[in-house]
Structures are given as C-alpha cells and as structure tokens.
Image (cartoon, rainbow, N blue to C red):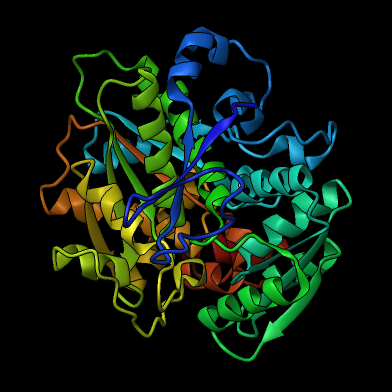
Length: 417
C-alpha cells in the first residue's frame, strides 16, 4: 500500500487529510482527487519493480494505490483487471490504421470495467471497517460490486432503475446482493443511495461521489502504460485512447492514472483521451462543445444503458480528461453504436452498446480527420455483449431455421451463397 497524503477538490483545489472527508468536498461538492506521496513512490520504486510483479490483476499496482491489500487470494476479487489488449489487424486494415489496439474489459470477473472500481472500494471498505457497501447502478457497477463483495463475503446493497436490462439484474441477484429496483432513472437511484448511506451508515460506492472509484479505474491507464506505451519508441506519436462516457468516472479515472505516472516521472507525454457519448446522452460532450465545465442535465434515452445518464456526477473531470490531454469529445447516433457491435464481433470481441460506442467514435474521428493512418490508437471495450443480448440481436440477422435434412441444408447453402 502507498500511504496517501489526502484529497484535493477538483473544483476549489482545497486539500483535506485522509480522515477529514469521505466523499465530496464539503465546501462546494466537488469531486475529490486522491493525492499520493509521489516523491516517496519515486524514491522507493523503479519502473521495473512494477513491471516485474507477477500479479495478473490490478493488484500488481498496489504500490500506486491508496488501499491496503484486501486479501481474498484465490477469489474473483484478485482477478479484476489485467484484461487482454488485442491487436486486431483486420480491423486496423479496414480503417487504414497502422497501429490499433482494443482493450477488452469484458474479460473482467463480472464482465465489465466496473470491477476495477468495485475491487478497490471493497478494499477500502475492509480497511475502514464498513460492513455494508451500497451503490446505484444501471447494472454494471452493481454487478461489479455484488461480485467483488460476494467473493469475500461482504454485504452489498444495489439500487437500480427498474428499466435496467434483465441480464444485469439477474447477475446482481445471483451474486446474492440485496437488490432494490427504483421506479425512476439512474439519477433517482443515485440520490436515494446517498440518502440511504447517510441514514443507515452504509459505505457508498457511487461513481462520481466516492473518490476511490477513480483510483480503481485508473488501473486501466496503468495497464495501458505498461502493455502499450512502454513498448512504443519515444519518437512515436502519442497514443490516442477512445473510451465511452456516461457519468464520467471511467474517463476521469483513466486520466488520473496517467497524471499519477507523470507525477512520479514514469511517463513523459500524456496520451490524447477521446470521450465518446451517444447523441441521446451527451451532457459531458455538450459542455465540451460549449467550451465550458458547466454540466447541464439532459434527458438520456440511448440504448447504451451503461452510459445513459441525465446528469453526469463526474462531468467536470470528464471534460478535463479531453481538454487537458489534447483529446476531444465525439457523439455518435445509436444506430452506429449497434452497427459497431457487429463490426467488433467478427474479430472475437463481443461488446455491449457502451463499449461499442467507443469504436463508433473512432470511426467518426477518422472520417473527420482527427485521426491519421499513422496515429497509434487504443479503443476500450468497457463491457461484454452478454450484458445486453437484446441490443446484440439488433446488430445481426437472426439465424435461419431449416428442416433437419441434407436437402434442406443444401437448399439453404445455395441460397446463402
């Protein structure tokens, strides 16, 4: 564990000691950044001390995390992170790119990026003696919390909109979490969760609220640094990262990870981070386009439920992830998100709509001239397509039904050729 110095408000920059606050800035409600003792890390560790570690999970980065080792050896908690990074050459050729990677977060224990945040929050809960962890979720964050908590016998309570995909709700229940469906949207569930945490003394995992969620999500940036950036010659162009954005915590967490590496002196130049939103849930993108950090709520109706958010709770830091790295925001229509699912599938990547949105955004960036053929690009698929089979079925044609005879098979093959 790296002892952290405390917190810094992302809005007013006021600093707090570790025990002074728990969630957001008391002065203005701003999201808190965890501040590490960067000089101490630089003095104590070398890059080789990290890259030589054998943990095939996010826990290989414990020296850069503000939590103690949570234990749980031999459980799914120890398998979060360290997801595969593919080089799909056929897709690269199709897009005219020389260097393309896709990082598949669907390979996490509960099949989404959110396992990273939940694993670290569970570690923090154990550290401070919190017996119950609660969160609001459209599905993935809740499943991640439920799965990580179940792995070590911790109690989890999940508030989810009643419209959440049934596959995701089933996952919550199977893991044994206490699940409460709210007759409202994600924002309604979010507000109720905070009230319940205050009323019952539960530890709240909500993204864009609990500062330790970004610490978990930053581990994806550490993996990208270790697996991609360290292997790129210093003279090469900066890496361009495409990630879908809902409440803004994933993109801000990734940005935080790279900022930590720069502060330690292990990263010279910041990658360009591109945030992708559906046109039907674009509160953060709208602020970016208006050149402001004021996040105005929208009425989100996108099919990509994981990024369907009326009022992003980490919107300010999400805007900065693009503006401070030379990236940008791109919005895509839902039909292009659905088409992207079908485009990723033939190379073995099954993405849910939120993950496919990042791919759709890359295609728009190329068409608009923001990405050139020699620009290195990494796309994050944030969740497995198994999370939303209904959306996946919209991306493909239904399989044919034939009589169980050779004649029928031959007839079908002839008509299909």
